[in-house]
Image (cartoon, rainbow, N blue to C red):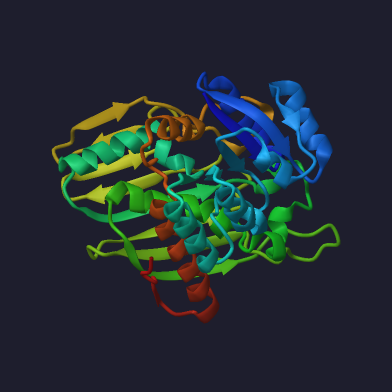
Length: 349
C-alpha cells in the first residue's frame, strides 16, 4: 500500500488527485495540507485521512509520496521540500516558473533516488498511447508535419472563480501557454520521440479581464511553429477564449498516412492511409473542461501510473526528466514571443 499526502486542496485535487487515489486499491490518502484549511477538511471528510496544520507536519507523517497541487509559483518550493523529506513527488503541470527550478527538481529527485512525476495526463490518453505504438512500429513512417490544439473557455470554468490565480503573472507565470500549451508541446515530443529544437511563438491577451475591466496580465491565447530535430515542422495553438465546443485535437501527417487524434466525436483515433483505407478506433473520450467541473470526469490514468511506478520501482512515462523538455520549449516560446524572433531551444541537464 502506497501512503500519500496531498499538498494543495483546490480544484485539481478535488476532481482529479483525491478521487483517483481513492479509486486505486493500492493507494491510501494519509492526509492533506492547504493554507485554506476548509478545503483540506472537505477532502478529508469525503475520502478519509487527516488534515495537517502545516506542510512540515504532513511531510513528517508516515507516508511514501505526495501530490503537489498548489498554484504554479509554489510547485518547485513544495516539491523540493517534499523530496528533501524523502517523499516521492507527483507535481502538477507546469513543473515550475523557471527553468532553473525545473532542473533543481529533477536533480534533487535523482540525487535522492526518488520518483518525480509530472501530471502530463495527455501521455496516458488511450488514443495517444495507441498512436505512439503505431509511430514507434514504423507503420506510419516519418512524421513530416503536425498540428495540435487545445482550446476551451478558460480557467474560470474550471475553478469557478472569475478572478482566478491563473490570471496572475506573479502566481501563474504564464497563461494559456503554460496551462494548455505545455500539454500539447509535451505531447508532440512524446508521440514523435523527437526534440523540438526551434520555436517561433506569439502570446497575446485578447478577451480575459479582471473584475475592474482591465485585461489580465498573462496570455489568453498562444501559438507556435515548432521545428523538430528531424526537420519536421508543425503548429501548436492554445486558447482560453474558445466559447464553443472544446478542441483538444492533434493531427500527424506522416509519410505513410495521417493520424487524427480526438478530432472526431465518435472515434478518438482515425488512421488514414494513402490508398484510401480508413481505420477508426473508439478507444476513449477526453474529459472536457466542462465535464471535469460537473463531476463526470473519467480517470486520467495519472495517479494509477504514479502508484504503479512506486510499487514496481520503475520510472513513470511522465517522469520529471522526460517532462523537462516541454518546459524548455515553453520558456523558449516566451522568449520568442517577447523578442519576435525564432529561438533555439536550450539543451541542458
